[in-house]
Image 1 (cartoon, rainbow, N blue to C red):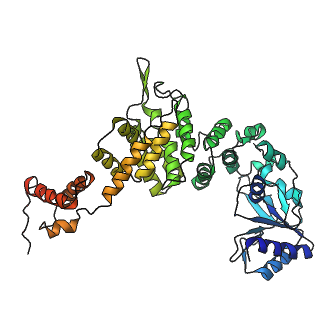
Image 2 (image 1 turned 45 degrees about the vertical axis):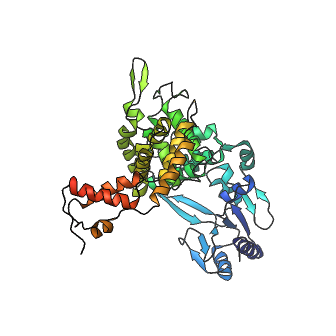
Image 3 (image 1 turned 180 degrees about the vertical axis):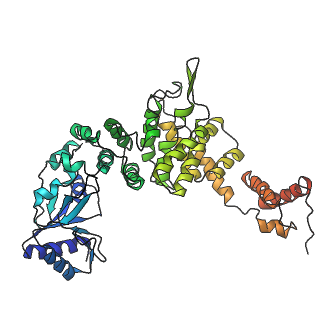
Length: 453
């Protein structure tokens, strides 16, 4: 059975037992917005726990997640099944709650426990009727992210990030009363994993990820987790190249340009994080001389700042290595395009990049995310990228080739291989590169080459 058929069967059995089953949360919201969402969440009302479990057992192999939580699944089915839940305070902390399933609490109370009005909508599985206790439909039409209940909302500080994330994903605006409430919520106790998860959604699911940061700025919530981004506010730029405003404005523009290209790059999350971090160095090295703003070396001066920022958010080595590499090199493609650099130089650049195609795209976004927009480098860079790939696909000198030619592996072996690699980047064919590498070993390193046996 499909997920939808499974849900309908559960709903029919629950109905026979006197209860009702509703689609809830993001599934209903996205369905109304016309957005595909394969994550189906249902909530079962009006049937006690034992009856629900019997019904689920009759449909498939039941899985249970916490005895008192009322959260279930079925093997081979990706539907999340839940009973309405109540929370009883056990302490003063935001985690100090006992969660108890309460299938008879009613749809009003169940919906009130959700974060935003647009997520409180419920759709009866069998009738299609929408239950809207808190004006979620009106907020969907108006493009507003609005919290439901002051007391319940502040129980989980992550909702500050979720408000900004939803605003970015749907290009909505956070309601003024929700902004005001978020200003006084302490998000410092959240784990970096939860922060990173919301950041990923904003970067990878939003048409305009800048909205995420603009809304956090309105809330006064940049300082704890995004201080390095906040530091860009008010940092001046040379108006000859940047008439759009400060570095914050430029970064937000680049971020939105990057969102248009994230589906074609090799590492979308790394690419979007690189767009966010590429100019962090300007906050620490921008100077003004005779009225002219300079940010010399910001691509390297920013590396420790980027490293610190990433360390607070993730332990993912691949992500950190990628973003640091892209930050360091982000200026070079456009520079080389403007200078019409030689093939050997562009090949060397692409060879030093963890993902040369992504580096080109970042550099293009850097040029487009400013005023005046610079969009004249793409053709040159892509031509050179294609040449680079063609050259790198050719046969090349390897260690075994040097050994077969009579070289004995030793302390200089790596140096000879590096020389052969330079010849490869210069476009030398394998036979010529091998001959030159052996000559390099003889004359420069004065290494004796044994005759073939």
